Image (cartoon, rainbow, N blue to C red; front, top):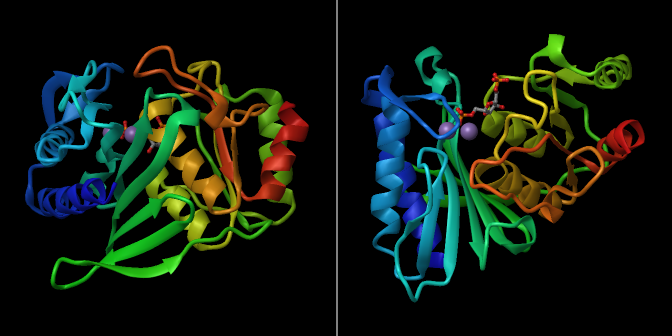
Length: 278
Ligand code: AHG
Ligand code: MN
Ligand code: MN
């Protein structure tokens, strides 16, 4: 799988440059979810596809910005689902954004996710690879990703990142979030799931939620490109990831762009969600 990690690193360096210097405006196109694509979404997708095309072991790719699957190598082994630029509408206000990758074998179900990777483009560029453990790397002046540390979640954290439009939350969700704040948790939410989830991982733990709401009853975040890859990272870091009741990695999407409500956190926070939703 190393050749895939190397292709992701090369893509990340090229995308970082595009984020720094390219136009942050919208294109005239919409993606499969109906979002108007930014020029940077399209460019990031093209960069990643071009780098993945050079890797023989990749059988097929599907991204948030593509309608359907793109076959690459008939004899390849891996399927990759990716979000080329998550949180792209935050670039024009100079907040952190990211890229997310899930590496699957066989099909794009949670149980067949074998590794995941995400990149954070912030004041610094960081890359996290989850296989049997979770390792963080940082880009240095020579454009090399240097190993920094292994990431482990504590059993309980201090941060709360509650996503979704509040006026559309269910009453039980609002009560749960209020009671978490009453227990002293601090709000940490930027609107970009990559930096929000990265912050919780690095600060020891907490809860990130994007629940079912009246406007998006199946949640907003997409299983293949966003939810499963981070569920894998959180589990391998010693925490949990559920849709309220079930483990996210037990789910199977029926369409590439299917979404799911999701909760990622350290173990005590995930138990708390289960008590409310279970
Ligand atoms: P994308 O930019 O790839 O469309 O996804 C953004 C995601 C995620 O990063 C964030 O947590 C969530 O959308 C926020 O959505 P809303 O602001 O619509 O709640
Ligand atoms: Mn996204
Ligand atoms: Mn995106």
